[in-house]
Amino acid sequence: MRQAADLPTPFPLARGVPGVLLDAGALGDLLAAFDQVLAPALATIDNIDAYLDPDLTPADFLGWLAGWLGIAVDDRWPAEHVRRVLRHTPELLRWRGTVRGVLAAVRVLAEVEAEVIDSGGTQWSPRPYGIPPGSRAPLLRVRVPRDADLRAVEAAVRGAKPAHVPHRIETG
Image (cartoon, rainbow, N blue to C red; front, side, top):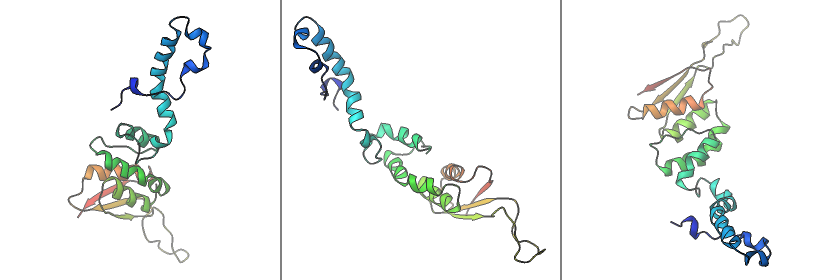
C-alpha cells in the first residue's frame, strides 16, 4: 500500500511561488511538506466518482456510502455482500413501503426468498352497505424458510415497511 509520502501531488504549491522566494530559505521545504499532507485529500477528490461506485470504492468506505443512502450495514457482512446491497439500493429505495419493496429488501439484505401477505389495512365492499372483507387493522406477515437468519429478516422488514404498519415474521 502506498504511503502518503509516496503520493505525488498534481498541483505542487511551489509552482505558484516566484523562484526567488524558493531559494531564500525553508519556504521550499515547507511547501513540500504541505504538498505531502494535501496529496491524499487531492487524490480522493480527483477520484470521488470511484468512491461513489459500490464496485470501486475501498472496503473501508462501504459503510459510509451505505449510510449516505440510508442503508444500515451489519458489521458481520463481508464487503462483497455490502457491495451487492449497494448495487440494489436504487430498487430498494424505489419500492420502499410497498409489498414489492419488502420482498426485495428481504431478498437482498437477508438473502432469502419470502412471501409477504399484506392485510391492506382498508376495507371496502363492492355493494353498498355490504359487509366489507378484510381487516381495518394493517398487518404485514412475512413468511421465510426455517433456516433464515431471523435477525437479518427483521432488520430488512423494519427498514422497508411503512413505520406505522405492524409486522409478524413466520417461519415455515
